[in-house]
Amino acid sequence: MQPTRARSPLLAGALIALVAAVSVGALGCSDIDRTRWKARFGNPDAQIALAAAYAEGNGVAKSAAEAAVWYRKAAEQKRPDAAGALARLYAGGEGIKADPAQALQWFEVEAEAGGPDVQRALAERLDKGDGVDVDPARAVTWLQRAADGGSLDAQVALGNAYLNGRGTLRDFGKASEAFLHAAEAGHAEAQNRLGLLYTSHFGPGLNYTEAVKWFRAAAEQGNADAQLNLAALAERGLGMEPDPAAAFHWTLGAAEGGHAKAQARVALMYENGTGVEQNLAEARRWYAAAADQGEGAAALRLSDLVLAGAFGPPDDAESARWLQKGAEAGDRDAQARLGECYAEGRGVAQDDAQAFHWTHEAAAQGHAKAQARLGVLYESGRGTEPDPAEAEKWYRRASELGDRDGILSVAVLLLAKKNSEDPVKKADGLAMLRRAADAGQSTAQHLLGLRLHAGDGVPKDEAEGLRWIQRAANQGLPRAESMIGVFYAQGTGGLRKDLVAAHAWLSLAAEGGEARARLNRDTLAHGLDAAQRDRSARLQTELRARIAVEPEPGAVPAR
Image 1: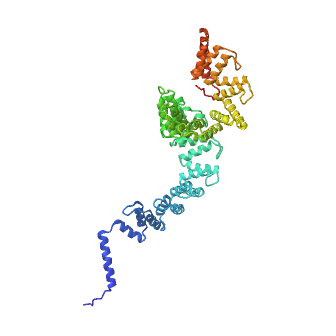
Image 2 (image 1 turned 60 degrees about the vertical axis):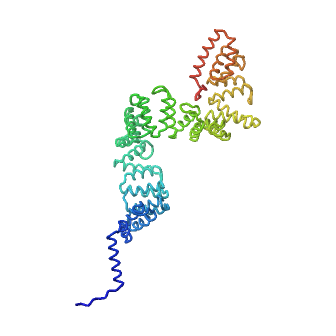
Image 3 (image 1 turned 45 degrees about the vertical axis):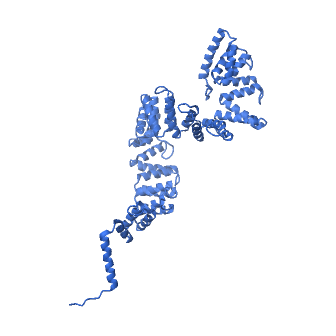
């Protein structure tokens, strides 16, 4: 019998503790506990799993900070997936302080070990500043590496960088080479880009035949931009014989693929019967499809067609609904027109606040007529508080864009009584008034004529004054028509007395709402016999026809 060895109390305690730990682990250790135990002993897979659990709050309290700790440990063991995850935490800044420098550091670790798609994604981040500082030059470096690694998307992006001179010197030759490399490999967007270069004098030089070749290659792959480009060449006969039917075919292909501008274009082709039989129902369908995708010009055109009765009786309410859609899409013409509808209660409930809102939207986008109308709204306090300073500001902006109403409004402000003793403002006002009159603004013509006729601030010249008033009357301005009627009735203003002509002009002015003209016409009518009244009626018909069809260039009749 061998002697029993004495065990150390310390060793015995450790063995007992180890057995107990193993027993407890076997009986109740959770998956997350085992993962944490492995992670603490340096297992990178466990570190990544534990980090993901913290990032998602899966089995542990959600903590971006703890996730970052464990992703970093795995990343330091050369795990690119962990580096990428850590980079995205720093880039997003959710639950952890955003740190673009740290994000870039770990994104580059991921990209170094990753393939060309990862490298291209990093280049895109650098170009846009997505979670990292904007650095176009560094983006080009990564694009080049991705392109060298076989990424055709990176090749196209590199071509765009050379084309636009972003992150590198502009180089049309290198852009062409990059696009050609990807195009020959079948990349549709590269083919379209190369086609565009062949329609310019840059890169390989103008060659419509080559442009058609590459546009067609991309179009046959369903590239909507290429389909539209090919349609444009077919329509104009560049690189091929003019072919309206082919132009329609390719435009329709892009439209059916959901391209909003193509949908608007195919609608116009159906409307005009270009390359296809005219079909207003199809035009309406495609305009609506484009408008529903935010193509404001399509909504505006549909509004015009509805108002013109192209699809049935004119419908102000439906027209206004399409204007609303176009306005909300940001089309300034639709915004200006919608503002008018709200101001007049045409197709919508009259609403000065909405009229002001949409007029202001259009004016802010540089719509000259909307700027002039906005000045009126500020001056009158319709839809907003009266503000003379804002009114003048918008009148001046409209006048600077050549809007006749804006020019007239500035002239009226400068010629106001408060400026009567200021020779500079008075001279400027008269110059603006003549400018508006020369541009065909009928009220300006009338006011200038009155000043010349009376010698008010200008040398008196009755003949010149009559000429301007007559021009305003010929555009249908009721006040000018009334004045011509008075001149004929009295035989003044440079006109010989003619009661028939006087009655005719006063009748037109009365129809336009001139109350004094109505009184003068009725008084004059008592002295006319039946034959004179008949002659007046015939003259009125002639004058109405002249006013309707012969407005001054760019002028809008007052009625």
